[in-house]
Amino acid sequence: MTRMIRRLFLLLLFAGSVPAMAQTRDTTPRTVVMTAFLPEWTALIRSVDSPVEQKINGLVFVTGTMAGKPVLLMQSGVSMVNAAMNTQLVLDRFTVKRIVFSGIAGGVDPSLAIGDVIVPEQWGQYLEVSFARKGPQGWIPPEAVDPEAPAAWDMMFPRGVRVGNAKEAWQRHYLLAADPALLALARKVAGSITLRRCVEDGAATAARPAACLAHQPKIVIGGTGVSAGVYADNAAFRDYLFGAWKARVLDMESGAVTQVAFANGVPVIVFRSLSDLAGGDAGSNQMTTFMTLASINSADVVRHFVAALPD
Image 1 (cartoon, rainbow, N blue to C red):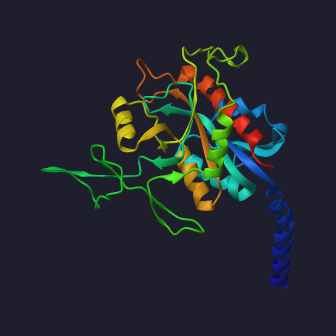
Image 2 (cartoon, helix red, strand yellow):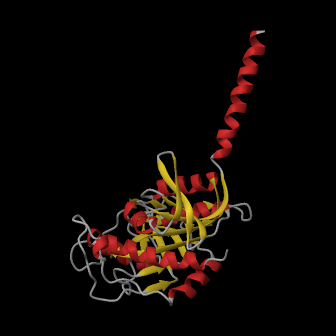
Image 3 (spheres, rainbow, N blue to C red):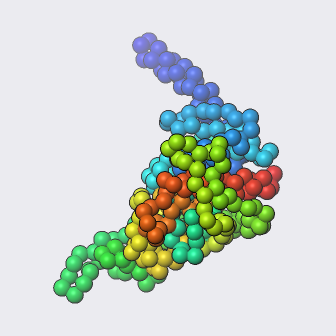
């Protein structure tokens, strides 16, 4: 009798949990508009109409519409593990049509300037490397050097990441592509947007005073972006990334988001506006000065892009 009562209790407990589990799955197909942290989120939250907020694992997810399109706005959290973990979380809990990332970044390509918005065609992870030991005649990496790998920097030898999905076998990747159709749409939209040179008075704060650029920022589609869990502000390493990786921009999340999207077969595109030059600035790093402006410029482009998405 005791065993039967125990089984009945477990069945009732499981049955009672099913509705709660079902409620966590949002069935509306949505475009996930992802940001990394608060300034990027703030630049977009007012564009979400009929917002509905829910919290999962302490993160805030806001569903609603943007330009009439169903969206979900979220923060991935800063850096690679947070970005990967929370990208998978949103894919598991919601019905995701595509991921559109909006944020700031450091410029690597010397032809780019603060305030510019770049939309890379592909993303790599520059600290997926082997650390070599020092030998009598130079560095000795612990494994054979792949001839397809970007060149080493000092003791660091790029080794790529092994990943696959339901359609492609696991293999080594140094770069993973953004969705071609989304890139084509970004090219179409870019010509109709004028980026901002100044932070509007309403967006400036005591901690983030108004800042203006001497030049007119531009939108650039194409090239390579790279990511790692590093706040990079080093001129020599910037030069290395531009030469060996052909990188145009670096950040701390996009490579992870792109990898998780690839593994799940979900289209992804990343918009990044330069808040600094990753060590290439003439003086000190300017991220805190132009973070708000860069966040707004990226958000402006993303709003136009979402409005142009097919229903």
